[in-house]
Length: 179
Image (tube, rainbow, N blue to C red; front, side, top):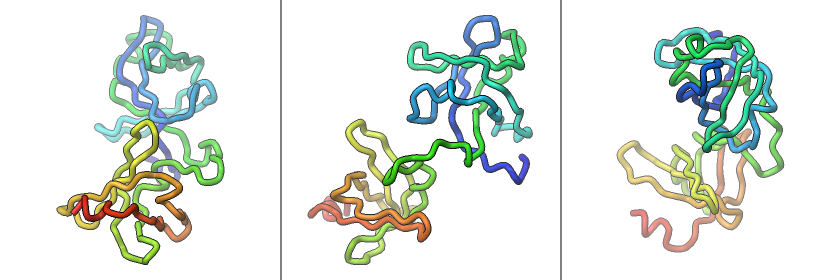
C-alpha cells in the first residue's frame, strides 16, 4: 500500500447485487447515507495485500440493512465478483468533522485509561455498541480480565487525544465486580 495514504474503513463488500455491477456493502460507519456523500474511494484487499484500487461511487441505496453501491468503473457482475471481502476505505482527512465530545472509534481505541484518582486501569482495546450507549473494553495485560466501562458523561470525565488519555470516574463497585 502507498505509505502516504492514511486510509480508514467505511464499508466491507460482502457480495453482488443484480447483474449490472452493483455490490452489497456492510457499512462500517454510523453516518447515515454515507456512501451517497462519497465520490472517490479506495478498494482494499487485505488478504492478498494488493495496492488499493481507486473507484468512484456512481450511486448507492439501502436495501435489507445493506448498502447497495454501484461504481462508475464497472457495469457487469463479472467485473465485480472478485471484490467479495474487500474493504472500502477513504483518506482519514476526508472524514466528516464531528461535534465536540464526539470521537471516531479509532481515536478512542488505544487510549490509556486512568481514574480521577490517577490509577492506571489499562488501554481501550475494543468498543461495543449496545444501543443505549457505547461500552469501552479496557485491558491492562493480555491475560487480564478486561474492565467494561460505560461511555457515559457521568463516567468518562475527559478525553484528551493529544495526551492519548481518558480519565474516568468509575461507579462504585464496578472494579469489585470485574475482579
